Image (cartoon, rainbow, N blue to C red; front, side):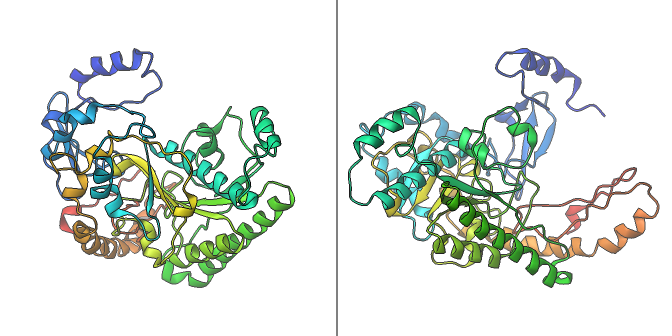
Length: 423
């Protein structure tokens, strides 16, 4: 079967030949105008020549309520939406604070009352790093003003003006493709190859064994090993004069392979950050917005003080980060065109349709039922693998939080198809 339809091939070929798109890998040309209403947690999307597909990637990326829901697209035609990136630091619109309060600030995480809007996930993390570095240096400097030496040395990229701080990250992480973000990204080599980077510490992320109930002791030991390595790296880099100013972690490693850790692991990691005076940055670019059954995935940890800084993007339809007041920098920047995609002048933005945490009930109720049905598959799959050689068992495991992930078994010579409509 040829996908996409032959009639679309010419459009794809033209797209691939353009300078701006030569490195893209388009699979179809979509017709957003004819995309239908969302069905459950999946988004039907129409191809340019009329065929309809289920857009399974939409819950992760830009628009979790489907691209052509009328209420999702109408905000793009609000005049103020087209004002692109004005200088908010000196010329904010008169209703900017009201928009933020009605939209992003209405879902602010615990303890984080401050907000900086950004355009994407990478720039959100990149500027969160800068905020952390400025906060850490301010702690060391105290109330003193910038010294003459600092002002001079920063112009030639030398200390003390440019202190040699670092951000600790985890193997398998993906935080973006700008310079600082790439230094904390360790998922695929193709993202990093040929790009200079920084000497920043990289800790192992737990590799849990499944089913979880059969490997309780082993998984506890694995998480303890990773936490011990985190502390060792913080001490090691302090001795190297590359002080760890912050720790960045995803509640679920997404592009790095869908790797999970227990809530207890993250609670202990948070304790380590406090113990060593490091800022704790939670990257919710992939996990925020409700797909885990909580609006923010870190809410599963049950902490009153879950983080110092939290970044978001993708399904939030904008980028940015929340942070504690003590991390507030002297400069303010951002993009008001994106908050207008939230409750704007017509009050039909994403958070109006997805009011905070009240629309998450289907995720909370359906996900356990799905996991329960999938858990019964291993014995059947093991039996089927005897008929296949070679066979690679990548089992359907109930590791997902909410509806965030679905692991399908893959075989060489066998495709196991699940009839999800019977679940």
